[in-house]
Image 1 (cartoon, helix red, strand yellow):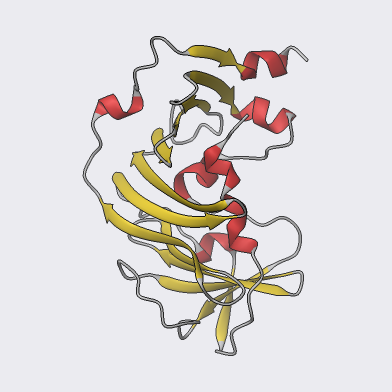
Image 2: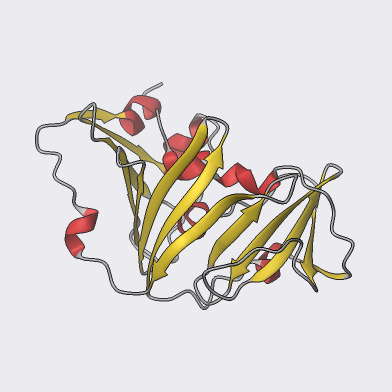
Length: 218
């Protein structure tokens, strides 16, 4: 069962050489604040995963609706009742196979996919285990970003990875791999409110796979 949002979050813990620049240790919420996220957000992203390079597009509508398209084939729409509700519902739509798979937060947890709303909306998952976050004084590489962002180093298990976080957009604009090459880059962004139709793709003739109900029945 594909869950495109969750599949790419782990990229932030890819190994990278540690930066020699002085840094300030931070809590996760300090390093990656979301309180100032814009009411609407849209971004195009190119990222590299174990299976190659992918293109994605993300829309956030407030704190209750989001959509992500991946490689022109998978559409993921997630919704929740309010900004304070940790529960969410998600539809994963395979436009080539014409299958619409329904899941929710509880069913994902039951099968060991610990995905929360913040993972989906803001692109980063809180690391498990012991880790340290450092705000870098200088960039770890000569990387051009589409908008201003703050470089953060994540140290974990003897490895360091790098994320350039945009406070204005509440989203990572660049992530770097071991050789300090981009494995994630936002290539376009804006803050125009998305059309309502984006969150209601036409799946009238699709096969519906209610994975959430199946998992609850196990």
